[in-house]
Image (cartoon, rainbow, N blue to C red; front, side, top):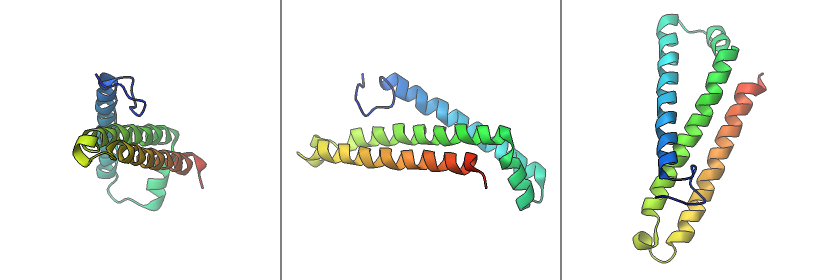
Length: 123
């Protein structure tokens, strides 16, 4: 069983569930946006702005941003723990993995916060 301070969930099953639920949310979001684009026909700035600016889409976009962040973190955490190991790259494996995970975590946090500012900051 996976137990690590850098894991998103408490264990491997929690991480697996986060990955699957976020994938389903992203698929549903993609279908909704594609459906709107197909139904809209000609997309103007005003139509797109109105669609993305309504409260329902702001909430959906918030869920999407968080889902992308969680999905990316679990996926990249899995890759780093599988391939950035002492066995794979030598004695510095643990240090390299932790630095990579720190950089990934910071970039993911910036992505999520920046996305929330764009969604809710409004212009």
